[in-house]
Picture 1 (cartoon, rainbow, N blue to C red):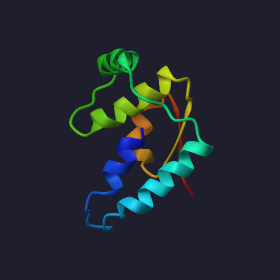
Picture 2: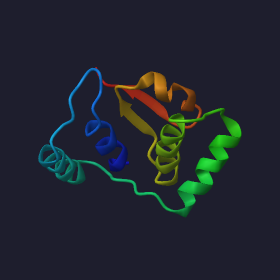
Picture 3: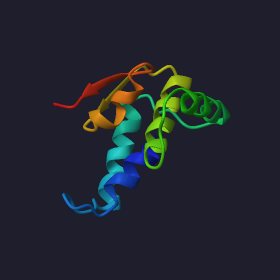
Picture 4: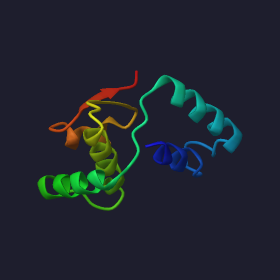
Length: 100
């Protein structure tokens, strides 16, 4: 899950510049003390295939489906995100909570 966070925030985008690695490392260390961190494993791959069999996703949406799969395997039911539109399709599996 942290890999996706790092991938997004280190990538140049039209609306934001990449964040320095030192800043992101500090943020990740803070997250590790405050949140449950869910890592991928073979069960996640199985769950991902199950989700792909139920919901049409493709391209970059596979990353979102993988996040949801990881959450399910680890018993995480809520996702706090700025990208509500990206995850609303997965609402049968998780509760999407918008950052306000």
